[in-house]
Amino acid sequence: MNIEKEYGLEDMEKEFGPLTFGSAIEAHRMCEEMSQKQFALLLGISPSSLCDIEKGRTIPSIRRAEKIANQIQHPGKLWVKLAIQDMLRNADLDYKVSVA
Image (cartoon, rainbow, N blue to C red):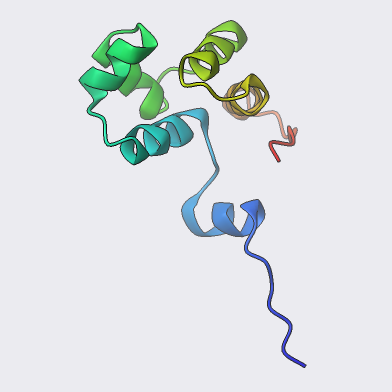
């Protein structure tokens, strides 16, 4: 019997590293085929702020994460959870926030 394993978040993180707010927002921007300047304008932030978020140098606050989600017309829950998980990771706290 051939049983195929589903490729999930844990598999992706083992292969590519942890899913972060920055990597997710960068992937979203690239899928929309927008430059950082265009996307920053859409979000109402500076291109340098967007770059800092994408590179993980800045983690948006919970309110900012929710606002970004609204601006890209996505449910806020995933984006807020990603921001919280990044905050926990930066504090060296080994807690997991379910982002699924």
